[in-house]
Image (cartoon, rainbow, N blue to C red; front, side, top):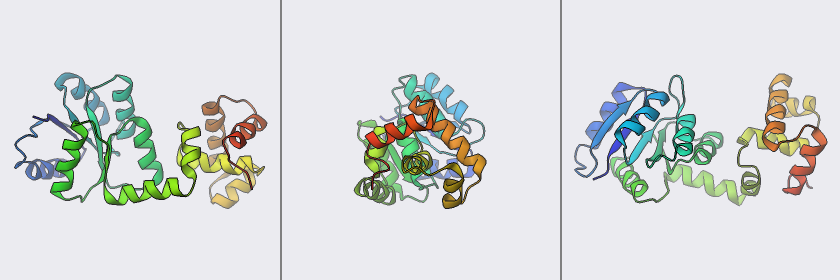
Length: 213
């Protein structure tokens, strides 16, 4: 039996999953959570085998909830089930420790297969998400992700531009974001790379292959 916890803040969606999984006799739903905090609490008290985790929930979001479960060495395998398929969301969930990533709208068989695969220790991704992952690594972005796993996709993009010698104002203009947002990204990058100066960040970035012609 695969004990399942559903974490999603929409009651109607949770009910839909209940109906969808009703025929899967080996997947009993042992609990439901409408916030990330509640998901972490129920994971500890109910000891589910798999958690279907939405990313956007009030308070603690699904990524941070997954990260906390990973840090707590929870035995539950997290399978993200969300409407977001952007690179930032996909790779943030993977870095947090998710075993799978599906998009809402996935067919019944796909969701059941993902739950069973995650319970067996496998990693599984929906077709659209798998294509994004393949494209990500095929483009060479994977090497940067491996070198700096704590950075978000946007932070890696900013670091790449910093490594080429571009200033904050130029980065803001090219990415069409505010100067303040760029400064925040740069500050986060410095913290995560454990450097205090731009030159040090550039050295680390170039050692990882960023910023090279």
